[in-house]
Amino acid sequence: MKKQLGLGAVIVGVLCLSLGGPVGAQVVVPAGYSVEEVAAGLDGPEGMALVGAGQIFVCEAQANQLPGLPVKSDLTRVRRNGKTTTLSSGSGTTWVDVARDPSGGLFVTQLGGGLGGVQQIHPNGSPGWFVPTGNLTGIAYDGATGDLYVGRTSGSILRIDAAGSVSTFRSSTRADGLIVTDDRILLAAVLTRFVGGVPFSNQIVAYDLESGVEAVLADNLGTRIDFIALGRDGEIFATDSADGSLRRLVPDGSGGYTPEVFATGFSSTSVRFPTFSFNAVEVAPDGRIYVSDYGAGKIYVIAEE
Image (cartoon, rainbow, N blue to C red):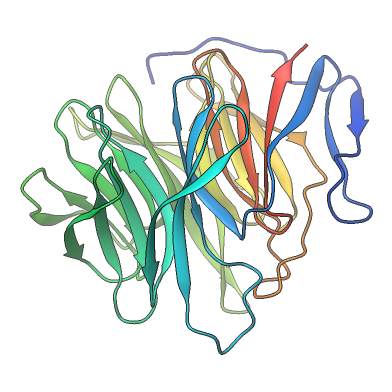
């Protein structure tokens, strides 16, 4: 990646704040940072798209729905004052991640019910086109071409162009979190091993969309990296939904990254998926870090003091 600014890789202290979530839930961030709850009462918040410095679109995956009931998902707008409104809803599938184009159009990935694919949603909330692809997780928008990149649970990364045509970008690659940087690098949280049938992610891979070169930026990471985001200073933030940590990968100056645990303590209280804690992460232009807590139904913002 072209943006390589070094940061210190040692956390020297922590600040512990109780945020009024489930009993015993605490979010721990490094000294010099504060954490604030910006939205609550969400039901299984997963992927997010951040607009400017505070407005959020988030997929609600109905984490506390009892097994056996019809699956339903919402795309929710969270305004800067914390007020939430449902922009669009779907039934029969789980909406996992969301991307936004410059015109305000939204795209959500969905899985389950034999209806996996990408659903376009207009700025007014009405549905647009639907591209069936099979079950999907992460999604990223390439501002240079209008292409979408999506992670398929069966093990591939797909490219969907502006006309809706689908092609395989990478086969035999199971990726959840995806982002496209301004210099057209596709970053992917790649699942490289399975334990007891459960996929675990331990690599961040970079694909140069112009040259086709790919490189492993970090290996042997965490247990289940779900979503990733590029920080203001070139670092990569990655959520580990299995152990409830937010990891930060700091450029080491030689093309690699040094991983560290940046924040911990996110809850695991989902009825449907009790082992999941939090999923998505987004970084605003001012460096504020937004994370969605799947089990507690909250979105937090972490900021330098």
